[in-house]
Amino acid sequence: MSSNGSGTTAADRVFPEGFLWGSATAAHQVEGNNQNNDWWAAEQAGRLPHQSGLACDHFRRYGDDFALLAELGQTSHRLSLEWSRIEPRPGELSFEALDHYRRVLESLRAHGLEPIVTLHHFSNPIWLAEQGGWTRREIVGRFARYARRVVREYRDLVRYWVTLNEPGVYASQGWIVGVWPPHRANDLRGAFTVLRNMALAHGRAYHAMKAEQPDAKIGVAHHWRLFDPADPARRGDRLIAAIRNRLMNLAFPIAIRNGRLIPPLGSGGLIPWLANTEDWVGLNYYTREHDRFDPRAARIGFGLEQFPDVERNQLGWEIYPKGLERALVAASPGNGREVLVTENGIPEPDDQDAKRPRYLVQHLAACHRALEAGVNLRGYTYWTSMDNFEWAEGFEPKFGLVHVDFETQARTPKPSAYLYRDIIRQNGLSADLLARHDA
Ligand code: GAL
Image 1 (spheres, rainbow, N blue to C red):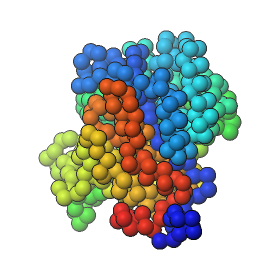
Image 2: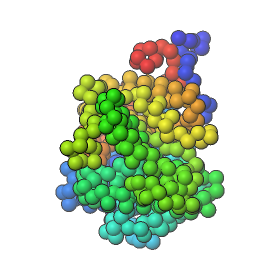
Image 3: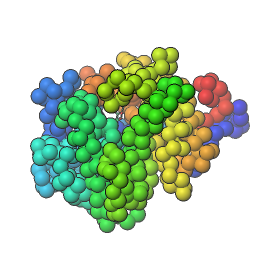
Image 4: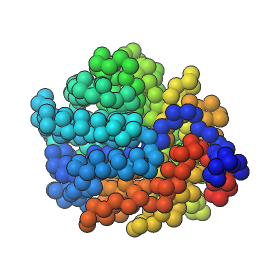
């Protein structure tokens, strides 16, 4: 343990100067009353088990929320813009919505929070969904048009842009698992079309955005999951883990880095204008899977199996901090390319904050090890700023650093929010803290 002489412990694992310490949200999960998107429509039609309703009423309370995050020491904030508010009808922009998000972004800046702005985080304007959404090739031009317009509007306020959040999760939940709009189950072809269109839309948007803001830093928030063989000694298990890794983790980044559409995005064709369309790498990391080869199982997971004795979170996902280090190293293209953790967090039931402090310290220790391994990690964004609408799971899994009372909308920081603040103040982790949390 080291002391800086002022009574507080100095960090032993120090993060780079200017490291962005933040937390994330997404529009549909926090804003409330997003009545013009496909999620809302599906909720109203009874196709989803929960309704987002007023959510965190963040649409009106953003100023107070940002003030709280700043008080909690945070220096950046990831949020998404709601496309359905900005473009309520095809080609028609809402100046009211554009003004609103200008105030939101100005408020972030006023509170010293560096904005990390996502253009698409799962929800779509109803008109777009009705026209076939991401399954139609037209989405490529439509998304680029929206992206260009938004960048033109806010280029004075935003440096870090995320075009898309977790393309693989979006395609799989909507077209394979079928639990999210548009609720197509086992439609592999649909899922692959969506993924390909997302890669192409990202590429088109990239160039359109750069035309408006040449120094924009444009990336994607990739969902990165670890895939390990259930039994490393079994060839079949190793093979399945490797295939799933390629499909879920590697194919999309390869498309936007090398311009190659490998399966499941395509059959290897080269799209030159898609290459080098990632200025920085966003990484959302939650868990790992253990894969077992079972030829009798026709599912895409081939008898996916989880070790029974691993520590899991409330949603059953393995808690595996080392995976964040491995993911960062694997996802980083090297060459000094900036990498940011764009999501990482843990849900707990009710008002609990029992596992989160340890989770946070252990995952930040993993980030530090990735830095030491040469990853140019520039920021860490905890998921999520405050308890919110967790998609098909509703309001029960609570990932927030700040507790939200959904009756009164009162916000109460959890102990882990203060722990995070202390880490941010030190810009690192003390040996004492690491020892206390077995990190
Ligand atoms: C991510 C998603 C977030 C949040 C989180 C926790 O996949 O981007 O919106 O829901 O998972 O489940």
